[in-house]
Amino acid sequence: MATDYDEVRSDVKESQDRSLEALQSANAPDARSVVKELDEADALDEGLTPGGEIVSEELIVQVIPEAADEFTCYSCFLVRHRSQLVRESNGHSYCIECEG
Ligand SMILES: [Zn+2]
Image (cartoon, rainbow, N blue to C red; front, side, top):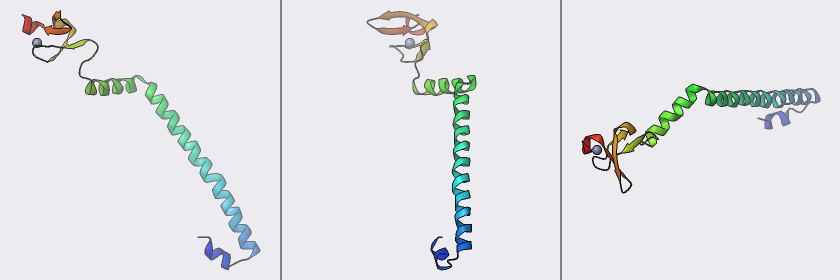
């Protein structure tokens, strides 16, 4: 890009190129950084909204099937709600269907 300009060396053109480069180097990075900062700010705002929290909880549930109000029955090995827990022995939980 700059090699051709060196052969056509004139003070006027060189000053034009310099001013153009100065404008580009002065404007483009600023515009990008401002847009980037806005994007990051939006991302942070979205992360704090209830919608973002719901998405996070869904992701956690997918990775960890046993939630805080659930247990895994040691007999049938199904993840069940705490309300179905009827017996615990030796650290193992048993659901109402297995114990009923
Ligand atoms: Zn069970």
